[in-house]
Amino acid sequence: AQKVTQAQTEISVVEKEDVTLDCVYETRDTTYYLFWYKQPPSGELVFLIRRNSFDEQNEISGRYSWNFQKSTSSFNFTITASQVVDSAVYFCALSDSLNTDKLIFGTGTRLQVFP
Amino acid sequence: DTEVTQTPKHLVMGMTNKKSLKCEQHMGHRAMYWYKQKAKKPPELMFVYSYEKLSINESVPSRFSPECPNSSLLNLHLHALQPEDSALYLCASSRWLASEQYFGPGTRLTVT
Image (cartoon, rainbow over all chains, first blue to last red; front, side, top):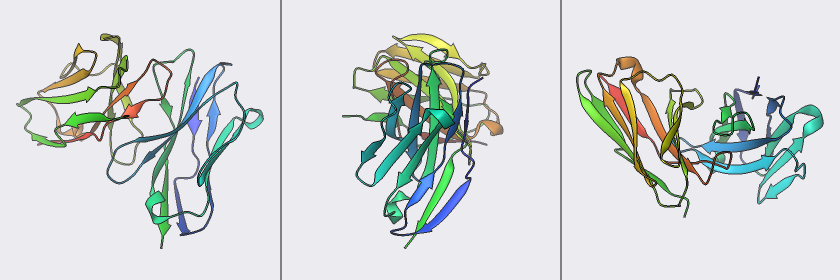
């Protein structure tokens, strides 16, 4: 069965701190895709990244970076030098070849960045 | 442009009303989705349309009726809803199945 676990329900940091959001996934498929979405208080889910199972290169985009490790089935997300605008709920999600039209979401991690 | 628009932003309806939610995208995406999201929970998939055909119905009650008039539009018709149907309804689209989904801002629905 497919499953995404985000064990951190809520994280609070002070501005400029680095913070890592954990994501662990389960799938029996060898072809799958991992995603991160941000949901600010306004409610809209914002796409951040998509990674396929054959591409284990880590990705950096500005202050955001992602660490994909198949050996531990993890796809962690780090925000460097956090800012108040980073406050949001972050969802990790999975789709695989058996469920290409479905996103399996984790329960989300609420990040609060205080000034 | 990665914009998905949804109307209305807010909707309050009684249990005997009929209303519709609308979603539009002009990115040429071939898959469109309806999700329901309750507070402090992840989105739950309701329906998937692929090339304007319904490909997934996640056992959603018949009081929710989706419609895809063309490749850019997706509607969700609501009838005889219950208070527990109050939630944020999100529309999304993607180039094809398994590609990233782009979400609209949602319609916050309250059923009284």
